[in-house]
Length: 571
Image (tube, rainbow, N blue to C red; front, side):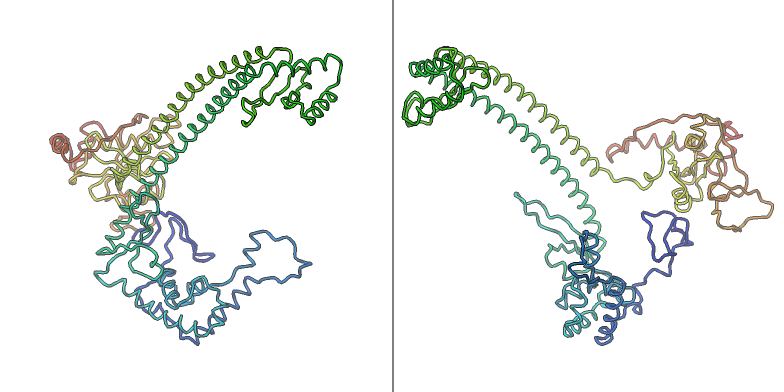
């Protein structure tokens, strides 16, 4: 806000009533703000008056949010939003935070402390509280301490408190800051409390540590995500390799069993081939094998299943080297001998082994690629954390800004509210105001150094103003102009002090320019991008001579016009 309580910039809008809203370029509604320094705004009702007032508020709440009573036959399906609306009840904390409670200016924290001191819950329903007269009297007694707690905030030398939470992870991490408070209240009992010498020190410590903790949590989360990704890829690869190894073992074992029991396998194949050659149907053959197995025929007991529906004479045998071992299921081609089937299984095992070697090499390459990608992600996160911790943004970085060729700071507004903020708050008497008549041209300020400003800095500021205007899109050749800071005043002031009737007056953006404007030569539509390197204290001394040489070419503000005419920078 400015001196007239006109809102210059807002993070978010706020509405006090239907026709009272906080907006940019409007007067802030001072009448709707509360003054907690005045004891008259804090008023605690006696128990009897509080009980009557609470009953009236309960009736008003029930009238505003009635709960419909429906019979089970009339009640239909109710969505979640409607169910929440029907269950809305006025709580003790909501009652005390009302505008007419006399305690709203104390804030929710102090009110919650008083409610807890009375042995009640802030979320307790009001209708339940009113049924307990003793609890109402205890609440009114505890509310008497609210004015004292508020007045305690203004006492000098008050400490500050930081509420922290201990980490439950292994290994234990540093305390995580949750919030800061000027008072130690009952609801803070479950948290770890850090006491500071002053509230300002607590706020500084909280925000300084919170940012580093946020960056540390982000870095840890990135590490855990990268580790989970790598472990998932590794687990998938191990499962694929395990399946290939198991397939090799099964094929080699099956081939060995076929060679070991070749005579029995040949007998089984002979019987099945004879039955098929005689024209026996598939179902009849299956029934014959089942009946022979039931009679205890050892050859029929070797047949596990028949795969004759695929137009192939294939069966699956259940073979084992020892009767006590669990039999292995071995495929058998009835068109080949036992040893030929074993040789086919050995070839399949050899192919599976070659596939395993290729898969293992591919898995190693894939795992290495995932690990490298995870490491790059971690490096970027650590670099981002290091950059965030190493430098705090300067106050002027909210504007468009650059350092001129001679080291002057030039600021330009991004929009109209920021232009008002720039002129009203940061335009000093020795500075220069730069603008252009093209639509979209930003408000620009050249910041003086030791009361002097450079003509070249003004020329470069004019180039920025032109390039940021509509001349850039239209490729128009136009000029910017400058004026001294003393010529600039707010446009909403109809009669600025010192304004004469015959004085030349111009309107620029939302400001009024008194006196002549000094036009600059047409600026080229060119913009550059530069990298600004910061200097540590050890390197700053070596650059002082360069800064001193730049200041020799600076001119006082009153000589700026003559200097620009001398150098051909003014029209």
